[in-house]
Image 1 (cartoon, rainbow, N blue to C red):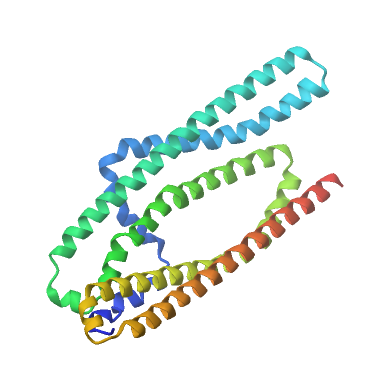
Image 2 (image 1 turned 90 degrees about the vertical axis):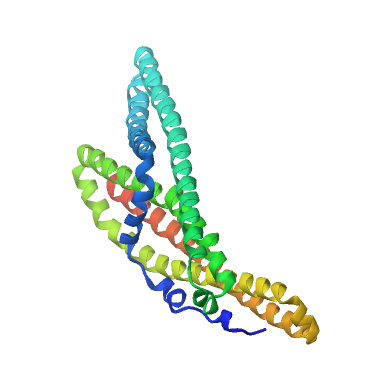
Length: 283
């Protein structure tokens, strides 16, 4: 069943081409009313990263002074310090996870409410050139992606950045020469991962669009079910839906294969680099 409302809008067609992360800055105004929770999440993130870095130092002291040094008193102090760090890490992780997820859900709720109010005020001409399922997908699926980016992507990136900076400082203090070797190996590992990751990101956007097309087809067919049955188009609509569903499956399968290959690639490069660095450090 074809109609004018099934024409893909130019904005939707070019939506996946933008990789400008500066668009995320526009979300900051939605977080402004909850600035105290944002500050709390940032503090918890910093404390959690510092605890992870301190844990390594504490374990080193525990082994060197406690076990290797055969000093019972030093062992007790080291164990107490490690337990305190673990407790701080647990509390900070809880606060970070709760606050970040709360902020993500709150931002998405506010965004959906604003978008829905805006959609209701658009002219009828807008809906003549857009699929109904596409509009619904923007209100549901796309906003969920934003929530995932807020609750997982951004916080993980910040946490990893803090761990990278802190770990580099600790490595430099411990062994500057070995740190230099690590910094030389990092680009060799990171660049292929970034290049391969772009392919995975492209397939993820493509799979999302295919799912939106399936949802749109379902809604349009059900809404016009009387017309479909009146003209005995059930078989044609079923074949059309099967074709769209299979296309969505094949795209999702390509994405799954690419993500699996990326995971294997990351494991090979990362652990291979670790082995090389340990071998260099051992010699």
